[in-house]
Each structure stands twice: as structure tokens, then as C-alpha cells.
Image (cartoon, rainbow, N blue to C red; front, top):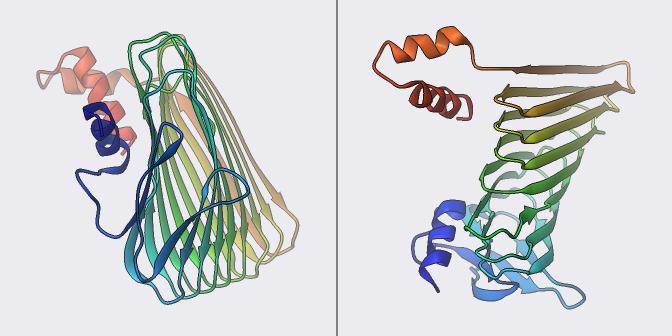
Length: 305
């Protein structure tokens, strides 16, 4: 593994050396390394590119790493990853994609992840995206996440676009069952002429289901962002969707939160706030000895935590 690949893995998956537990590392469109455990199996699909991650009922305290790294310019990588998760499971899944493009052709990764989660399970899913390289070729990613959340289960999704992604279209569709809950936390940073689009659709189908979709983003330079979120309350349920964005320089941000109550006992809330960094915040930090640029960075870092 090259030093660049090692660095990408550290950034997107906190990996230094071989991780504990199950893992599948994909590099430049091919399997690089894999390990399974007694409770977690990973199988290569036979009909299309991608893997099946099968987690036995009753599995507790285990972690799965499934990072993707690309160092080749001109590569368009597409994978279909299915997560079949049993009942009474408690696991953490760490995904992410890092692209280093030093060439003049587009490097792109599209990942379609489908989760089938049984009853009374707890799943934490962490996904980080990062791009680097001094070439003129694009570093583009288009993740699609499909969630089927079983009765009494909980899923927390943390998705972060760190920096360096020229174009991304992020789609998430979720169906939430009886007494199940979904929490989505998105963080995005764009700069230059980058473009980022996110589109969430959550169907609260089960009685007692809930969802909390929160996006925080910072748009710099001449970048553009579009946030769409639709929460459908189809039963007795609670739903909340929120978008907070800091806009800087000549950037543009569009926020389109939507809630649809299709049941008399659906309780739904949507919020959106877009604005620049307040002058008094900058002034306060600058009186402590920070430059204006340092003060901006401190405010942004705190906002995206």
C-alpha cells in the first residue's frame, strides 16, 4: 500500500495499520484486503460490483470498516453494498471514500449502500468523504443510502464531506418501522467552484417512529450547495428536519426542507437558517489575539462539530 493510500485511510476511516474486527478495503476499483469475524461475514457479489455484509443476530460491540480509496486518475468506480443486519445487534460501521487525483481526468466513486436492519438493533454508520491532489481532473462522489429500519431499532448516520470534493450528489431514502428511530447528522464544506447537493427522504411508516435530520454546512468562495429534505409522517410519529448554513464570499446556498403529515397523529417540524458569520463573533475572537482568518476558522470548526 502506498503512503498516499495509507494517509487517505487515516483521514476517512481513522485507520492506522490493520483494524480490529471485520473490514473490506477497496482500492482503485478492486479488493485490496478483507477480514471477517465469527459474527460478521463479508462476501463479494457475483452479479455486480460490491459486497454483502451479513451481521448475525445478537452481535454486540463489533466494528466494520469498509473504506474506498482511489489514487488512479480517470477511474469511475461503482459499487453496490448491502448490509443485512439481524435482530438485537449493536454495531458500528465505518465507511468513507478518499480520492487522490494528480491527473487531468475525472476520478469518481458512486456507492449505493442498502441497509436491511432487523428488530431491536442499534447501528451507528459513519461516512467521510475527502479529496486531494494537484491535478486538474475532477474528484467526484455520488453516494446513495437506502435504509429499511425494523421494529424497535435505532440508526444514527454521521456523514461528513471534509473537503476537496468537486461535485457530489448525496441521496438518502429511509423507511422507519414501528417504534424505530433514525438520526442523520450531515456536515459539508465546499470551496472554490465546488457543487454539493443533498436529498433526504424519510418515510415514518410505523406507529411510534421518529426521525431527526440535521445538516450543517459551510459554503466558501464561489461554491454552491442545495439541501433538500422531505419527512413524511404516515402514522403516529415525530419528525424533525433542520438545515443550518454559513455562507461566505460569493457562494450560494439553497435550503428546501419539507414535511408532509399524512396522519392525524404525525408531529413534524422543519427549520432552515442561512447566514454569514456575525461581525461581533469575529471581533470578540480578534480581541483575543487571533487574525481575522484564524477567527473565521475557529467559528467554522465550532459550527461543524
